[in-house]
Image (cartoon, rainbow, N blue to C red; front, side, top):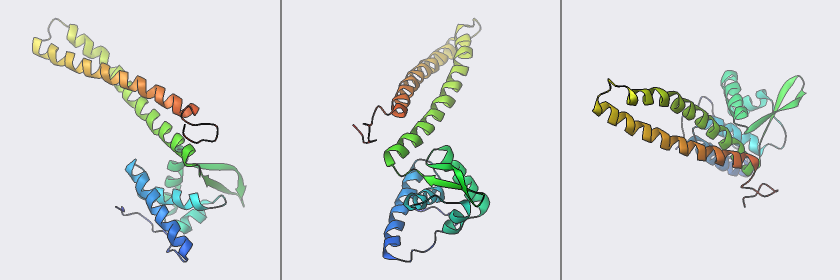
Amino acid sequence: MKKETSGRMKEPSSHREQLRAKVIDAIAQTMDLYGVNYSFGQLYGIMFFEDRPMTLDEMQTDMNMSKSNMSYAVRSLTESKMVTKLKEKDARKDLYVAETNFFKAFQSFFTTKLQREIDVMRQAIEDVIPPLSETILALHTSEEERKLCLEDLHKLKHALSYYEWLQRFVNDLESGAYFDGSQEPR
């Protein structure tokens, strides 16, 4: 299902552009499933089909999006490594290119997102375990509260084991362990 966006893609003017628009919409819907703004997914889709790097102005024209929203979209896609800012410029304007290898895009996107989840959750859990343990050991803690705290501690330790496993998965994904040399899955 399409979400309302701040801009609209240009209407396709040829059969090939209509076919591309169908795939661009599917890319946007898929990225939306993973928490990426639908219009950012459209932008990635447009850039995916470009045979050359694009400037922000060109993207803005293709997406009919405000400059501030376009900058935010590009920054978001760059942070998730779906788009790369090139070192060279075009008439003093930054150039951007989309990652067109879906295996590499998957690898980059998910290692970034999963690493963020791991870092946030492990920090929170590691911050909570010591005071929770102190509450369990405190003489003034009621038996009911101690029991509830022990249950929480057990859940958190189980969660930590999950995040240790997830960290190994991310490390392997990042290293290319799930791909052969051509970025194809094993």
